[in-house]
Length: 373
Ligand SMILES: Cc1cc2nc3c(=O)[nH]c(=O)nc-3n(C[C@H](O)[C@H](O)[C@H](O)COP(=O)(O)O)c2cc1C
Image (cartoon, rainbow, N blue to C red; front, top):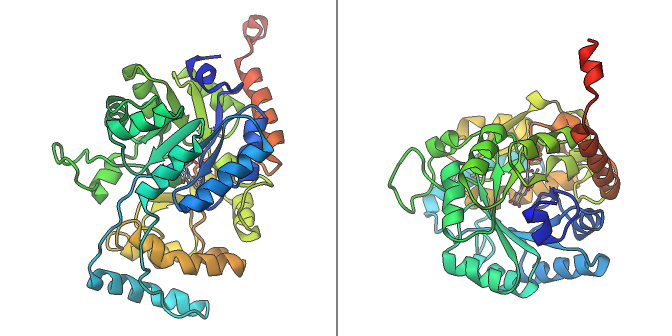
């Protein structure tokens, strides 16, 4: 029992990471009920959908759970940029028998409306990625009883979250599946408020080991380790570095309760650690996933696709159609470098197994065995 677990009233130092598009209330409830902390990725959920999924978790368990948002403003891309992005994607849409995508009425959910829905839902944990809150926003969440966690990909980002009053930081190493949460600009010191460039994203690809160790040493608030943690030994390792909990995404992706379809499950079952890359081509923000045809076909456009959420919105219909057709070729197969260790099973069983492995990994070893070698 450390300070974070005591505060959250959970038994295990283990979060199921929020996974936009892949998590479900059933997954989150199963993890929370088993003693960990289940999460709902709400970055692309409407305020109404947020209310519904929070209610669904509460109907299934009285245990605490978390909700996560993308800190994002509505972009205003120029028409030429949007048209160029549409033209690049048109052949892939045509391959699936679809017309080219159209610019949507809005590019992403309204963050401020989502934030109000979050305050109303009062989850035990409210976590954020892609940006940072103001101190006033952090205080509003704390006033309704939510513990606030910010995602950091560098020590400077972790310190920025501590400075606005966050209760804990999720230190997300470069091994992690899904999007990089990077929001600061290490290659442009002093450029306040500037969006991270490709060079900034590259500089912020810090591995879980050094990131967690640095954050745990420098911060006085708890650190949660994310990225590449797949089993009980990984949990023990992260805690030995000073983390108070771990956040695991890829490990839970192939659980029975996750929302992913058969093509994605099949890809996860066969992927090796060497099969993942980070790419901007699906969404406009670097994210780690399993290499497939779409990633390879658009690789040359890596530096020119419009930033998140524009590219994300323009590829959305294609990815949905590919999922429906059972074609992994045009899906964003988000997964971390630990993908070869994914174990498909119900979430409660996985949490129990992780707890058992973690205990084994931390149990004192007999010195006589070492002495006789
Ligand atoms: C499919 C998928 C979707 C994700 N969506 C989100 C998200 O919406 N918000 C977020 O903060 N992190 C998101 N993540 C990151 C996870 O919450 C977690 O931090 C990460 O997966 C940990 O690394 P691992 O995949 O190596 O376990 C996502 C990860 C995956 C694999």
